[in-house]
Length: 337
Image (tube, rainbow, N blue to C red):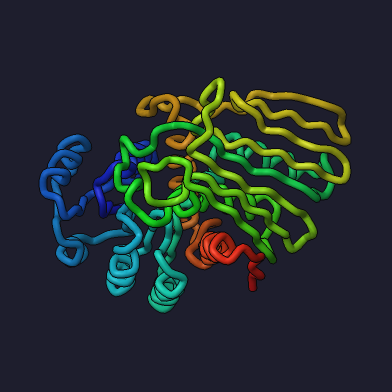
């Protein structure tokens, strides 16, 4: 299976390592507007076909898929370009800066008959997969309350300085993941209320967000994220989860400990992610989820099935992000269609 990657920035290196770990898949071409960065990454991964123009790459290469790892404003142009060439697409999150652009990309992919998956990798983390397994087993009954929390003081700006310059920050960059996990675990939301704060004076956007979600099946959840929390022991990049059900409860706590009280009694297990040979702590949790979601993509392409985080599915997660900003600006709850 021949793939190409567009965008050789901060996170794309993880994707290239993960593609190299998947049998019978090869990234055969790279594209980036920065020739120096293109050369650096191309040499690191031994990829000789390098382009500064995506159209030239699509014209020259026979591809089974393209992995778009650029920033959101370029996504629609690149996805529509891939659709014209009938090349299936993995697209980095956030999917689009607007719902209009997101819907246009989904429509273009469907019209071209190609698969489109958003690289929404948090739900593919080993600890979160373990939580999904507990819920699927029915051991805690029907969930009626949850909290999905990511609170940290980690300096994310040193590696990604552009994050400090945008009018929107934590909901768009991190909260989108946490909202997607809430959807994955508790189902789609019907109403959302949000409050945001900016604690760090050196950034433009919000670095703390607290959101309340009403879910279609009757559950209520609190989704909160912060990059301004100074803690006794830094938990980055762990997501903490609490869910209460009609027959019990579960708690995913620091150091990847999953405690479950349910119909079979009480248990605790270590659900730590493996440390892959190319990964590094503390990023290894996220890095392993990249491999997991890319394996899922390959399986769905080969089986001609729909990926879990398809473009159409991700419209619902992106709608939550926009609803959160709308609610934070107005102070009112936002109803979701």
